[in-house]
Image (tube, rainbow, N blue to C red):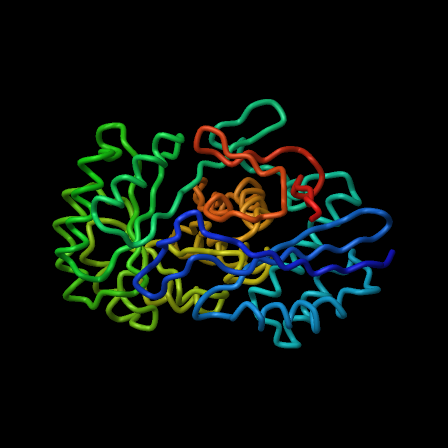
Length: 367
């Protein structure tokens, strides 16, 4: 068996929120990439996207076309682990690596006639809203850095669509961020009164004193998670704040593989870790990080970022197949962009549906 066709498809992805920004960057969209591989008449599709501060769109495309595609052409997809090891040894960036890994998993699913979560060991859970042949993974939707009024309006819109979990970007300014949370509370309430569960994400914008100044607001507005309050390299500061914080601290940017996850766990720098497919580069590495964290009593959360739907759907299959992850995941961010050529991902009642169709159950809408 050999891969006989490899295609790299670049598409412009436009954010549905043209004012999207965080404490680190702002953008109106990015390049999305679908990597398609074919063997024995079956197709597998992986995906990725460019990301400010990590890998420029053109550099990502160059890696996919000039390194990844030639490395896949003519190879036996059943040797996925060896193929991925070679790409990693060649220094392929994680955001390019994940497109290849997902394409190979999807292809194997189609060749074997099984959904990926079955290939990954079978469903550990029925999903949070399972029905016959379908499981639902509850999703967290992100809201960018906004004025209090704009934040409240977008939160209300998402809640009206059935979203029960929100993650809000913060600025690193305690008074301004507390005002944002107050506006959000006034508009949609909190989990205490039947409203959405709320997480906040500073993307490392605070120092220790500033993060401590946010503690009254964390309590007052029933915040469930504080993601990356301090810079990722400040493990001492993160450990100190983790001990003070009334809510779990989640590490994100500084955790990219098993080694960096181990450093956070040993340092007791967080009670949760964000695991992302585009950040880890392979499904295998995501599972290794989650299992390592579980051994330390640190919770693994499947995080996300805007990309074509294959990334989110793969994440949902992973959460379904692994008991090491929190069952609520950031697997709805494909809805934060327009222009995705992949079809078949469905969000209903705040859940991303995982079906029993082969692979990831997605099709490609040709131009």
